[in-house]
Length: 164
Image (cartoon, rainbow, N blue to C red; front, side):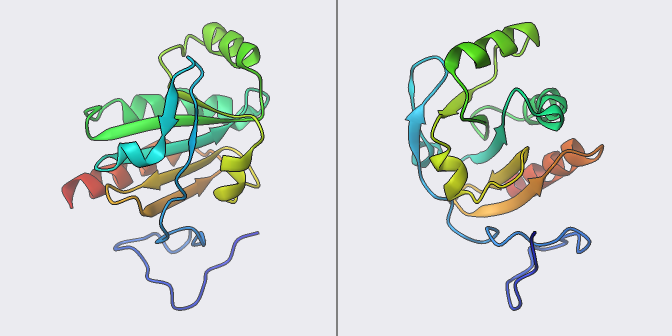
């Protein structure tokens, strides 16, 4: 369960009905991993962009619902400004590839987190967990689960950061 930490700075116009995640306002833990396509990925190399990390797995119903919506919302921004990275929790390359092919989501950038160490660094307990990191590498917004308004909220948070 999450709780609001007293004395922590609320980001401007935050929706107070959303419990504040303890990660918000902290430096995003850097990580290096391998992408589904075999290339290397290092979070710190994305500095200067808004990065949306989505922790997910193919067996997770809400994750599967969230992906197309998150892809759609994040792809409305220029790739040089916004990166959408799907961090898969613990599954094999073959499993993920088969899933993406079936769902026609092959353009998705997937970071492999086989040992779920990235997930641990981001305190992932439930998935999907979507984390928005600002251009300076600070965690700006965290969303756990997927609801009707999730995509719209993610888009609004990105828009806010790009206006900064």
